[in-house]
Amino acid sequence: MAAQALDLFGLTVSIAVGLLFLVAGVAQWRHRALLPGVIANYRLLPVALVGPAAISLPLVEVATGVALLIGLHPLPVLVAVGLLLLFAAAMAINIVRGRGHIDCGCGHGALRHPIGWPLVARNVALASLLGLHLRPASPFAAMDVATALAGGVAIALLCLLLQSLTALAASPAHRR
Image 1 (cartoon, one colour):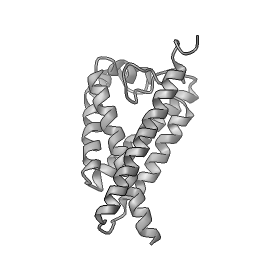
Image 2 (image 1 turned 90 degrees about the vertical axis):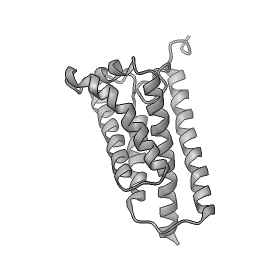
Image 3 (image 1 turned 90 degrees about the horizontal axis):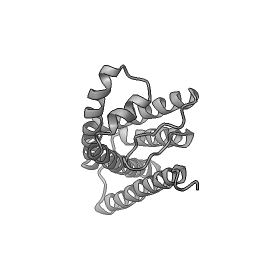
């Protein structure tokens, strides 16, 4: 019973992360003129790699998100875990460098969202929880899949809401 609950929770997190990657990738593609600057601000890649990274990152995020949503695994799960940990490491390095003011590049291009330890923790937590979906799971009943879908949508919406509220709170217009 406990193993089945963990499998179901792994599916729920996989759906949530799939939605988050899909939303972020589409938003980054829509605001692709800003993405090279966001990536360059992290000061982790050589200048020659910033352009290719800005082109490939939204495509990889969308592809990973779609693959997670349609239930492919283990490769998309491993890619998603790797991306989440890569993003967490890039943010942590910049926070330690005293550069917590830079935009995370997590989504909506019109909202600047400064990096911070809560974002690092969110990414590490999502990566850890997504690891539950790496185990081979027994087939789910339709009600289980519906429950996982509802839970995944709820988690993704909660993450997006908190991200938007944090970005709004950090905006200069809000501080007046």
